[in-house]
View 1 (spheres, helix red, strand yellow):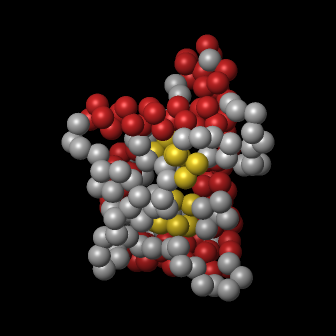
View 2 (tube, helix red, strand yellow):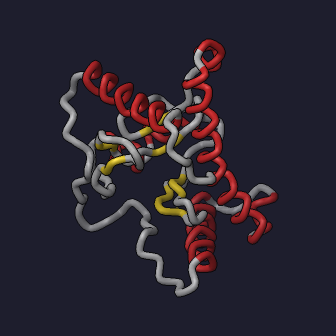
Length: 197
């Protein structure tokens, strides 16, 4: 499981989930997912979307396998997009942004062809191989090799993130997630020029 930036560099990785599990399930049980849920990830402070007058938090983008959370946006179900062009446009933009992650893994596996076949090593060795490949990938993607954004989810102390503290009321979290998604729907359907994602 990985978070990838717009420059195809891995920002955060969590290695060791079983492939038979869904991406959403792997994320929820991973250290990464747990830290997002507890607001322990160091995320930039919320900002205004271009041309909008409401502050919006930074979010992760996932596919249909993920649950909608205040920090994780997913597409609308297909049936809802048939009746609403605004939701369809939102889904198209999300799909384009998700390609960045898929492309990063494609670049990684193209560079290190070892990932074209099963790794026949011990689990600990396999995790080390994947971590090393991610670090080398980031090193090669940056000119200086100094990549301060990469982390292995084991900082000395958890850093409080930019998310607001959410009480244990699942309805409040759901309302906040829907509200955040609505901000992005409005933004993607505004007359503002969109970046080429």
